[in-house]
Amino acid sequence: MFLLRRVLVRKAIPFLLTIGVVASLAACAPADSTTAENSVDCTPTPSGSASEGVTVSGDFGTKPEVTIDFPTDVAETQRSVAIEGDGDTVAVEAATANVQFSLYSGATGDELSSTTYDEAGLTAFPVDAEQFLVGIVKTIECSTAGSRVVGVIPPEESFADDAAREQLGVGADDDIVFVVDVISVDPPAAPALPRADGEDQPAEDGFPTVKLDDDGRPTITIPDTDPPTELEVAVLKQGDGDTIEENSDVVVHYVGMNWTTGEIFDESWARGAPSTFNTGQVVPGFKTALEGQKVGSQIIAVLPPSEGYGEAGNSGAGIGGTDTIVFVVDILGIG
Image 1 (cartoon, rainbow, N blue to C red):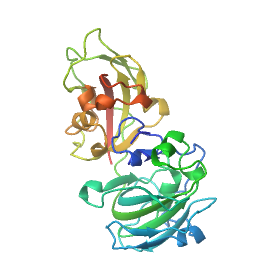
Image 2: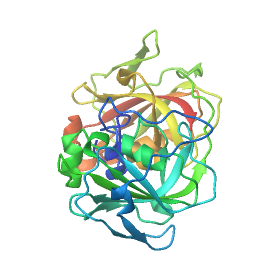
Image 3: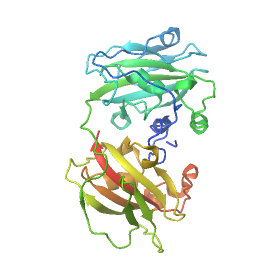
Image 4: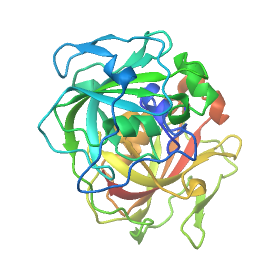
């Protein structure tokens, strides 16, 4: 994981996002972790002495003042409510919590990162332990809109990925403390498609060729030509579903390939499940390619460095600063 949203992501979007911490809170949790079952009567994660020992002050929706009785040492996530809201309950599964948050070291009490506590900092978290760290989901699930919640999370329910820990300065045995304001809750979206089901479109010149396996997984062949120097997007299948608006949560299957090397650097198909993310949290060319498209479509996008990872590249994905990257994306749903 390489990005604030990407540090929180569990496994779904290792190379698309651009913000940092959220991506690490996403796909880097231990594979055998579990979360509570979905139910009408949501049972929140219990509190404990560690979570109750975190002192939080300040108004809801503003950056809190936080004091931690460190070092914390918990065997499983503890959750306490600092401010009880009266909005919609966050479902254990499928709902999305829109939050502002701050992240701290349980070992030192130091702040590791936070959102900006303004409109730009509002971050969408699908309540899904397949996408985000199990301890993060345990903290958010069952919260109500308007609530400020504290989670103290052990290493076993946070980062299994050493790179994510190093990025944040978290030791291998350190707890993390997550203070989150649940601003609003979006209800579960309509079920996503299993694959793009739109009408096939004529191939456009200059693009890599795409062939589909029986299950819909694309195979990409790079042409023996120089890549374009500007963002190029073509529709391979034209869907007729809802249109992706600016900064929407989307559900997609995708394959990412390096034009220069011909190597796949990331794909959801190999993980056996589509990815969910917000278009405001991906590299610029990927955002531009998705927004305005319709659910059911399949697109191909060719991103020059300026629309991808820039001159710095992305060493973890094997992408150099001059490499063009290609995505083939099935747009399966919104939210």
